[in-house]
Amino acid sequence: MILDYHIHTTRCGHAEGTMVEYVEKALERGLKEIGFSDHLPLSPAPEGTWSCDWAMQETELQDYKNDVLKLRDEYPEITIKLGIEADFFPEKESIAKTKALLQLCDWDYVIGSVHHVGPWPIDSSLYLTEFEKRDLYKTYEEYFSLVIEAAHLGIFDIMGHLDVIKKYGYRPKEDLSSLYIDVAKELKKSGMVFEINTSGLRKIAKEIYPAPLFVKELVEAKVPVTLGSDSHSPDEVGKDFGYVVSLLKSLGVDEIASFSKRKKVMVSL
Image 1 (cartoon, rainbow, N blue to C red):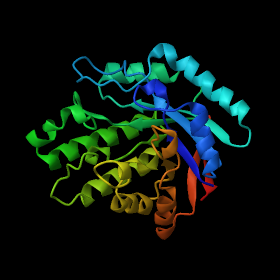
Image 2: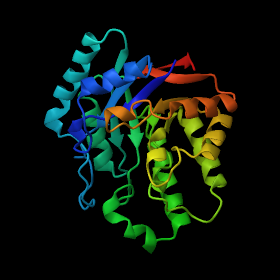
Image 3: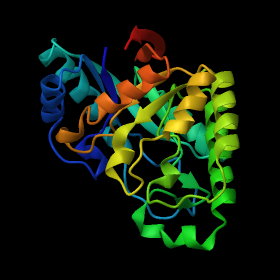
Image 4: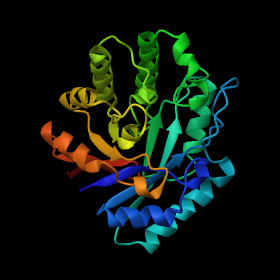
């Protein structure tokens, strides 16, 4: 079964198209299940976080939930899940606020994502010069340490776009294999699922998140996988999934993770 668990809506402020159009595109592409997973409000961000505006407001959460549930009733021919993408901030107060926000709805799954290293939003085009000021390998180490910390927090189900830090093509010259192995081991310990996110193919990186070699380490560590397009327009739903399915099958993967009410169920690929 092919599913797409990473679909945004216009509430994030940087997507286009109606939710109906996303569902219709999923049906057109033969998907059996999708999940909307727009950005949880960024109010947990600690003071001093650099400007970023990519999430709904707290007052919109219930309307978002209701819109997804309405679509579920209107389109019984496809399974529609209620998901959310929550940013990870390591500060104690931020974690408490994130937990409180996640309690406001009965989610089917929560994607945990690391978009910040300290105050810096690493996948924002506004701050690319920051890469040029830093040691890239050390920055990747710091980023992946945050991914591991997020995984062990126990409030997320799926780790989103594991190496999104490469989005704009800034990559260390050093071999990243040891970092991939460390992350894979820790994700296995945490019990989390990782997503293969095809949006990287549409960015400067021109590569899925995580990289194919990273996927190989995760599969060898027996970390379950799910699929996400990170759609910000209807045409991106399920995009490039044929490539991902072929990659997974070449690695011996024959099932992927689905979720309902935060419970994982493995389904045949």
